[in-house]
Amino acid sequence: MNRPVKRRAFLASLAATSSLAIPAAWSQGPARLVPLKFTLDFRITGQTAPFFLAQNKGYYKDEGLDVTIDVGAGSVTSITRIASGVYQLGLGDISSLVEFNAQNAGTPLVQAVYQYYNRAPFVIIGRKDRGITTDFHSLEGKKIAAAAVESTRRSWPMVARKLRLKPDLFAWSTTDFSSRDNVMVRGDVDGATYFHDSAVSLFARMKQDELSVLPYANAGVNLYGNAILASSNLIAQNPRVIAAFLRATNRAIVETFANPAAAIAATRQREPILDEKVELERWRLTAQYLGAPDTRGHGLGDIRKLLVEQQVDEVVEVYGLKTRPSPDGLFNLSMLPPKADRMVDA
Image (tube, rainbow, N blue to C red):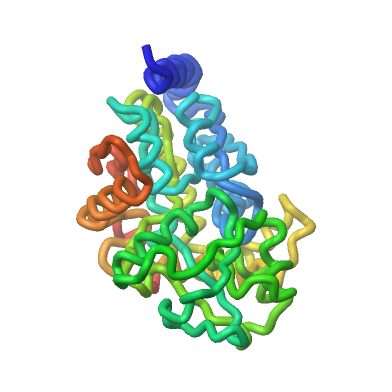
Protein backbone atom coordinates (compact mmCIF):
# COMPACT_ATOMS: atom_id res chain seq x y z
CA MET A 1 0.00 0.00 0.00
CA ASN A 2 1.50 3.38 -0.97
CA ARG A 3 1.73 6.35 1.38
CA PRO A 4 -1.31 8.39 0.10
CA VAL A 5 -3.57 5.33 0.44
CA LYS A 6 -2.29 4.61 3.96
CA ARG A 7 -2.78 8.26 4.93
CA ARG A 8 -6.30 8.31 3.56
CA ALA A 9 -7.21 5.12 5.44
CA PHE A 10 -5.82 6.60 8.67
CA LEU A 11 -7.72 9.88 8.25
CA ALA A 12 -10.93 8.04 7.39
CA SER A 13 -10.69 5.79 10.45
CA LEU A 14 -10.08 8.76 12.73
CA ALA A 15 -12.98 10.72 11.22
CA ALA A 16 -15.37 7.79 11.56
CA THR A 17 -14.45 7.27 15.20
CA SER A 18 -14.56 10.88 16.34
CA SER A 19 -17.81 11.79 14.57
CA LEU A 20 -19.95 9.29 16.46
CA ALA A 21 -20.63 11.59 19.40
CA ILE A 22 -22.28 14.27 17.27
CA PRO A 23 -25.22 12.26 15.91
CA ALA A 24 -25.83 10.70 19.32
CA ALA A 25 -26.20 14.14 20.88
CA TRP A 26 -29.08 14.98 18.52
CA SER A 27 -30.71 11.58 18.45
CA GLN A 28 -33.48 12.87 20.70
CA GLY A 29 -33.40 16.41 19.31
CA PRO A 30 -31.23 19.30 20.58
CA ALA A 31 -32.20 18.89 24.26
CA ARG A 32 -28.63 19.73 25.26
CA LEU A 33 -25.96 21.74 23.49
CA VAL A 34 -24.06 19.78 20.87
CA PRO A 35 -20.29 20.36 21.08
CA LEU A 36 -18.64 21.42 17.81
CA LYS A 37 -14.99 22.25 17.21
CA PHE A 38 -14.32 24.87 14.52
CA THR A 39 -10.81 25.70 13.30
CA LEU A 40 -9.89 29.01 11.73
CA ASP A 41 -7.33 28.99 8.95
CA PHE A 42 -5.13 31.51 10.74
CA ARG A 43 -5.15 33.85 13.71
CA ILE A 44 -8.07 35.88 15.04
CA THR A 45 -8.68 39.12 13.12
CA GLY A 46 -11.52 41.15 11.66
CA GLN A 47 -11.50 38.79 8.66
CA THR A 48 -13.40 36.25 10.76
CA ALA A 49 -15.37 38.65 12.97
CA PRO A 50 -18.80 37.12 12.12
CA PHE A 51 -17.92 33.84 13.85
CA PHE A 52 -17.14 35.64 17.08
CA LEU A 53 -20.26 37.79 16.76
CA ALA A 54 -22.34 34.61 16.46
CA GLN A 55 -20.61 33.15 19.50
CA ASN A 56 -20.81 36.35 21.54
CA LYS A 57 -24.50 36.99 20.84
CA GLY A 58 -25.48 33.39 21.55
CA TYR A 59 -26.57 32.53 18.02
CA TYR A 60 -24.85 29.14 18.16
CA LYS A 61 -26.47 28.36 21.52
CA ASP A 62 -29.84 29.42 20.10
CA GLU A 63 -29.33 26.66 17.53
CA GLY A 64 -28.45 24.09 20.20
CA LEU A 65 -24.70 24.24 19.61
CA ASP A 66 -21.70 24.70 21.88
CA VAL A 67 -19.07 25.92 19.41
CA THR A 68 -15.36 26.13 20.21
CA ILE A 69 -13.34 28.34 17.85
CA ASP A 70 -9.58 27.75 17.65
CA VAL A 71 -6.84 29.54 15.72
CA GLY A 72 -5.36 27.79 12.72
CA ALA A 73 -2.06 27.34 10.92
CA GLY A 74 -3.05 27.58 7.27
CA SER A 75 -5.63 25.99 5.01
CA VAL A 76 -3.78 22.69 4.66
CA THR A 77 -3.77 22.28 8.43
CA SER A 78 -7.48 23.14 8.61
CA ILE A 79 -8.34 20.52 6.01
CA THR A 80 -6.22 17.88 7.72
CA ARG A 81 -7.76 18.66 11.11
CA ILE A 82 -11.24 18.16 9.69
CA ALA A 83 -10.35 15.07 7.66
CA SER A 84 -8.88 13.42 10.75
CA GLY A 85 -12.03 14.15 12.77
CA VAL A 86 -10.23 16.25 15.38
CA TYR A 87 -12.40 19.16 14.21
CA GLN A 88 -15.83 18.89 12.62
CA LEU A 89 -15.80 22.27 10.84
CA GLY A 90 -13.34 24.94 9.81
CA LEU A 91 -12.16 27.54 7.32
CA GLY A 92 -10.00 26.47 4.41
CA ASP A 93 -9.08 27.50 0.89
CA ILE A 94 -10.87 25.85 -2.04
CA SER A 95 -7.69 25.50 -4.11
CA SER A 96 -6.08 23.70 -1.18
CA LEU A 97 -9.13 21.43 -0.98
CA VAL A 98 -8.76 20.63 -4.68
CA GLU A 99 -5.16 19.63 -4.02
CA PHE A 100 -6.11 17.57 -0.96
CA ASN A 101 -8.81 15.69 -2.87
CA ALA A 102 -6.40 15.00 -5.72
CA GLN A 103 -3.98 13.45 -3.23
CA ASN A 104 -6.72 11.48 -1.43
CA ALA A 105 -8.73 9.86 -4.22
CA GLY A 106 -12.16 8.39 -3.62
CA THR A 107 -15.13 9.68 -1.63
CA PRO A 108 -14.17 13.15 -0.29
CA LEU A 109 -13.29 13.30 3.40
CA VAL A 110 -13.98 17.06 3.53
CA GLN A 111 -16.44 19.24 1.62
CA ALA A 112 -17.23 22.94 1.46
CA VAL A 113 -20.69 23.73 2.84
CA TYR A 114 -20.68 27.56 2.66
CA GLN A 115 -18.46 29.68 0.42
CA TYR A 116 -17.08 32.41 2.71
CA TYR A 117 -14.79 34.36 0.34
CA ASN A 118 -16.75 34.59 -2.93
CA ARG A 119 -13.44 35.60 -4.48
CA ALA A 120 -9.97 34.80 -3.19
CA PRO A 121 -8.43 38.07 -1.93
CA PHE A 122 -5.12 37.46 -3.73
CA VAL A 123 -3.20 40.64 -4.59
CA ILE A 124 0.29 41.87 -5.29
CA ILE A 125 1.01 45.23 -3.70
CA GLY A 126 3.80 47.30 -5.23
CA ARG A 127 5.62 50.50 -4.46
CA LYS A 128 4.75 53.29 -6.85
CA ASP A 129 8.22 54.80 -6.43
CA ARG A 130 9.57 51.61 -8.04
CA GLY A 131 7.36 52.10 -11.10
CA ILE A 132 4.65 49.61 -10.18
CA THR A 133 1.16 50.65 -11.29
CA THR A 134 -2.17 48.81 -11.35
CA ASP A 135 -1.07 47.21 -14.65
CA PHE A 136 0.45 43.76 -14.13
CA HIS A 137 2.93 44.48 -16.95
CA SER A 138 4.59 47.01 -14.63
CA LEU A 139 5.89 44.11 -12.51
CA GLU A 140 8.40 43.15 -15.20
CA GLY A 141 11.93 42.92 -13.84
CA LYS A 142 10.84 43.69 -10.27
CA LYS A 143 11.56 41.83 -7.02
CA ILE A 144 8.40 40.53 -5.28
CA ALA A 145 8.39 39.17 -1.72
CA ALA A 146 6.35 36.08 -0.84
CA ALA A 147 6.51 33.15 1.54
CA ALA A 148 7.99 29.94 0.15
CA VAL A 149 4.65 28.13 -0.05
CA GLU A 150 1.58 30.34 -0.03
CA SER A 151 -1.50 30.47 -2.18
CA THR A 152 -1.03 33.91 -3.74
CA ARG A 153 2.45 33.01 -4.93
CA ARG A 154 1.42 29.57 -6.15
CA SER A 155 -1.49 31.06 -8.10
CA TRP A 156 0.60 33.64 -9.94
CA PRO A 157 0.96 31.43 -13.08
CA MET A 158 -2.83 31.65 -13.47
CA VAL A 159 -2.54 35.43 -13.80
CA ALA A 160 0.41 35.12 -16.16
CA ARG A 161 -1.51 32.72 -18.42
CA LYS A 162 -4.67 34.82 -18.40
CA LEU A 163 -2.78 37.99 -19.38
CA ARG A 164 -0.27 36.17 -21.61
CA LEU A 165 2.65 37.29 -19.49
CA LYS A 166 5.91 35.45 -18.92
CA PRO A 167 5.67 33.24 -15.79
CA ASP A 168 9.07 34.63 -14.76
CA LEU A 169 8.03 38.23 -15.40
CA PHE A 170 9.61 39.18 -12.07
CA ALA A 171 11.91 37.62 -9.47
CA TRP A 172 10.57 36.10 -6.26
CA SER A 173 12.20 37.04 -2.97
CA THR A 174 11.33 34.36 -0.43
CA THR A 175 10.33 36.09 2.80
CA ASP A 176 8.59 34.95 5.97
CA PHE A 177 5.08 36.33 6.51
CA SER A 178 6.32 38.14 9.63
CA SER A 179 9.00 39.99 7.64
CA ARG A 180 6.96 40.92 4.58
CA ASP A 181 5.91 44.38 5.78
CA ASN A 182 9.47 45.17 6.89
CA VAL A 183 11.05 44.44 3.52
CA MET A 184 8.36 46.50 1.82
CA VAL A 185 8.83 49.49 4.11
CA ARG A 186 12.63 49.36 3.85
CA GLY A 187 12.47 49.04 0.10
CA ASP A 188 14.36 45.75 -0.01
CA VAL A 189 11.76 44.58 -2.55
CA ASP A 190 9.54 46.33 -5.06
CA GLY A 191 6.35 44.57 -4.05
CA ALA A 192 4.87 41.65 -2.14
CA THR A 193 1.99 39.19 -2.25
CA TYR A 194 -0.86 39.57 0.23
CA PHE A 195 -4.36 38.56 1.06
CA HIS A 196 -5.79 42.01 0.40
CA ASP A 197 -7.41 42.22 3.84
CA SER A 198 -4.15 41.15 5.50
CA ALA A 199 -2.38 44.19 4.05
CA VAL A 200 -3.82 46.56 6.65
CA SER A 201 -0.61 46.06 8.64
CA LEU A 202 1.33 47.47 5.68
CA PHE A 203 -1.18 50.28 5.16
CA ALA A 204 -0.58 51.29 8.79
CA ARG A 205 3.10 51.85 7.98
CA MET A 206 2.98 53.20 4.43
CA LYS A 207 0.54 55.66 2.91
CA GLN A 208 -1.87 53.89 0.59
CA ASP A 209 -1.30 56.48 -2.12
CA GLU A 210 2.33 55.29 -2.20
CA LEU A 211 1.20 51.78 -3.13
CA SER A 212 -0.45 50.08 -6.09
CA VAL A 213 -2.80 47.16 -5.46
CA LEU A 214 -3.09 44.52 -8.20
CA PRO A 215 -5.95 42.08 -7.44
CA TYR A 216 -5.79 38.76 -9.25
CA ALA A 217 -9.54 39.06 -9.86
CA ASN A 218 -8.84 42.12 -12.02
CA ALA A 219 -6.83 39.86 -14.30
CA GLY A 220 -9.87 37.65 -14.81
CA VAL A 221 -8.66 34.96 -12.40
CA ASN A 222 -11.92 34.09 -10.65
CA LEU A 223 -10.92 31.87 -7.76
CA TYR A 224 -13.06 30.96 -4.78
CA GLY A 225 -11.18 31.52 -1.53
CA ASN A 226 -11.76 30.27 1.99
CA ALA A 227 -14.96 28.35 2.60
CA ILE A 228 -16.59 26.78 5.63
CA LEU A 229 -15.58 23.13 5.42
CA ALA A 230 -17.15 20.12 7.12
CA SER A 231 -16.24 16.49 7.54
CA SER A 232 -18.06 14.25 5.09
CA ASN A 233 -18.98 11.93 7.96
CA LEU A 234 -20.83 14.69 9.76
CA ILE A 235 -22.54 15.72 6.52
CA ALA A 236 -23.76 12.17 6.01
CA GLN A 237 -24.66 11.35 9.61
CA ASN A 238 -26.08 14.62 10.92
CA PRO A 239 -26.61 17.39 8.37
CA ARG A 240 -28.97 19.14 10.85
CA VAL A 241 -25.98 20.09 12.98
CA ILE A 242 -24.25 21.72 10.01
CA ALA A 243 -27.44 23.47 8.92
CA ALA A 244 -27.80 24.88 12.45
CA PHE A 245 -24.20 26.13 12.43
CA LEU A 246 -24.68 27.76 9.03
CA ARG A 247 -27.92 29.48 10.06
CA ALA A 248 -26.22 31.04 13.08
CA THR A 249 -23.08 31.99 11.14
CA ASN A 250 -24.98 33.42 8.17
CA ARG A 251 -27.12 35.48 10.55
CA ALA A 252 -23.93 36.95 12.01
CA ILE A 253 -22.34 37.58 8.59
CA VAL A 254 -25.38 39.56 7.45
CA GLU A 255 -25.31 41.56 10.70
CA THR A 256 -21.58 42.22 10.30
CA PHE A 257 -22.22 43.76 6.88
CA ALA A 258 -24.81 46.02 8.51
CA ASN A 259 -22.86 46.84 11.68
CA PRO A 260 -19.17 45.87 11.51
CA ALA A 261 -18.31 47.76 14.70
CA ALA A 262 -20.41 45.38 16.78
CA ALA A 263 -18.71 42.37 15.22
CA ILE A 264 -15.24 43.80 15.82
CA ALA A 265 -16.18 44.54 19.43
CA ALA A 266 -17.23 40.89 19.85
CA THR A 267 -13.95 39.74 18.30
CA ARG A 268 -11.94 41.96 20.65
CA GLN A 269 -13.59 40.28 23.62
CA ARG A 270 -11.83 37.12 22.47
CA GLU A 271 -8.63 38.90 21.40
CA PRO A 272 -8.35 42.18 23.37
CA ILE A 273 -5.01 43.11 21.80
CA LEU A 274 -6.69 43.86 18.47
CA ASP A 275 -6.87 47.49 17.35
CA GLU A 276 -10.48 48.44 16.59
CA LYS A 277 -9.62 50.91 13.82
CA VAL A 278 -7.29 48.46 12.08
CA GLU A 279 -9.77 45.59 12.29
CA LEU A 280 -12.63 47.72 10.98
CA GLU A 281 -10.49 48.55 7.95
CA ARG A 282 -9.60 44.87 7.59
CA TRP A 283 -13.30 43.94 7.58
CA ARG A 284 -14.03 46.67 5.01
CA LEU A 285 -11.60 44.93 2.66
CA THR A 286 -12.86 41.46 3.57
CA ALA A 287 -16.43 42.47 2.81
CA GLN A 288 -15.50 43.27 -0.80
CA TYR A 289 -14.53 39.63 -1.31
CA LEU A 290 -17.38 38.08 0.68
CA GLY A 291 -19.95 40.23 -1.05
CA ALA A 292 -18.46 40.01 -4.54
CA PRO A 293 -20.74 40.83 -7.52
CA ASP A 294 -21.91 37.20 -7.86
CA THR A 295 -23.65 37.41 -4.51
CA ARG A 296 -26.20 39.86 -5.92
CA GLY A 297 -27.57 36.91 -7.86
CA HIS A 298 -27.17 33.83 -5.66
CA GLY A 299 -26.56 35.28 -2.20
CA LEU A 300 -23.83 34.60 0.33
CA GLY A 301 -22.42 31.10 0.64
CA ASP A 302 -23.30 29.91 -2.86
CA ILE A 303 -21.15 29.34 -5.96
CA ARG A 304 -21.28 29.19 -9.75
CA LYS A 305 -20.56 25.67 -10.94
CA LEU A 306 -18.73 26.83 -14.07
CA LEU A 307 -16.25 28.82 -11.99
CA VAL A 308 -15.62 25.80 -9.76
CA GLU A 309 -14.89 23.63 -12.78
CA GLN A 310 -12.52 26.27 -14.17
CA GLN A 311 -10.76 26.58 -10.82
CA VAL A 312 -10.24 22.82 -10.60
CA ASP A 313 -8.72 22.80 -14.10
CA GLU A 314 -6.42 25.73 -13.25
CA VAL A 315 -5.25 24.24 -9.95
CA VAL A 316 -4.60 20.81 -11.47
CA GLU A 317 -2.44 22.32 -14.21
CA VAL A 318 -0.62 25.01 -12.23
CA TYR A 319 -0.01 22.85 -9.15
CA GLY A 320 1.04 19.91 -11.30
CA LEU A 321 -1.49 17.48 -9.81
CA LYS A 322 -1.50 13.93 -11.15
CA THR A 323 -5.26 13.49 -10.93
CA ARG A 324 -8.25 15.78 -11.46
CA PRO A 325 -10.69 15.56 -8.55
CA SER A 326 -14.38 15.84 -9.31
CA PRO A 327 -15.64 19.43 -9.01
CA ASP A 328 -18.95 17.99 -7.73
CA GLY A 329 -17.11 16.44 -4.78
CA LEU A 330 -15.80 19.78 -3.50
CA PHE A 331 -19.14 21.21 -2.37
CA ASN A 332 -22.28 20.13 -0.58
CA LEU A 333 -24.49 23.21 -0.38
CA SER A 334 -27.70 21.38 0.54
CA MET A 335 -27.57 22.79 4.09
CA LEU A 336 -27.40 26.49 3.17
CA PRO A 337 -29.95 28.81 4.76
CA PRO A 338 -32.71 30.04 2.40
CA LYS A 339 -31.53 32.43 -0.31
CA ALA A 340 -33.63 35.28 1.09
CA ASP A 341 -31.62 35.07 4.33
CA ARG A 342 -28.31 35.23 2.46
CA MET A 343 -28.82 38.43 0.48
CA VAL A 344 -26.74 41.54 1.23
CA ASP A 345 -25.78 44.62 -0.76
CA ALA A 346 -22.60 43.52 -2.56
